Length: 279
Image (cartoon, rainbow, N blue to C red; front, side, top):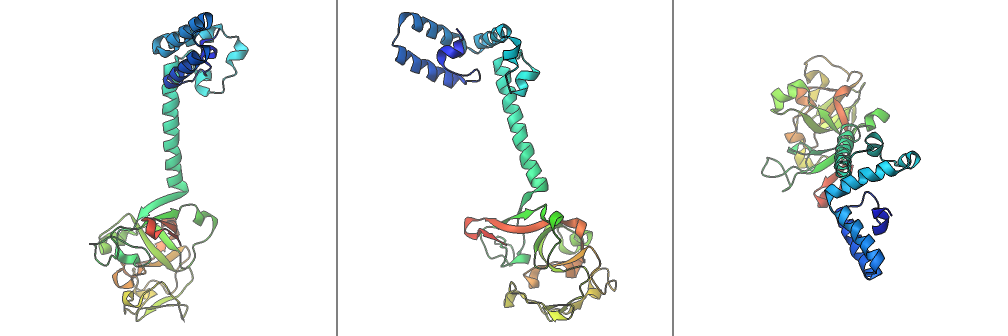
């Protein structure tokens, strides 16, 4: 009789499962002469990795071809004579590699986390003290939807993660990715008058700006780099500003952002727990 059947376990059973099955069966059969010998023989073979590997090879050789083909495990199909220990090891490697690949794919194409490093989006998004202008002891962690802008156009008011333009490193001393609020859309005429934003001549209602975070600058599109270039925001370009206008290095300093630089819109803050929210 098949040793696995004697113990009542599957061929993929772990050593712990084999040990538990042996103890359970021993108690149930109460050391009956014939069944005890059979049980002990099965246990002695399956608990020893070397003997088990030889037994598995022999078992596979004794099975009819149609029974061998029943396995749905691709490892078994590719390597029918592989010892049990090696099969388990390969299964684990494939599982781990698959899990890592899924995580990387999610980060690359679906959702990616980001940390807020500066005070440019205070108080909407917090950075950590002692950095200047920060309000919290822990920086906010946010999630950006990487595929959303493939399904819809960017909208005014979106909080956006994007790749920094070349001038940002020179003017702001940082590079990589920024998180700002999208204020100007293609075709817009943007102005800032004494710290208040006007789009196409109409004052923009910005409830997310606190009075003590507003600056007093007066600028137009012609003042943005490259100077005296724009009268309207061109197609596929966007104007970004931080909610902390007094302390934000944004489009007013380094210019407009091309659509190809947009990574995704921030849709949630997930850390710290007290700051969990959707945007």
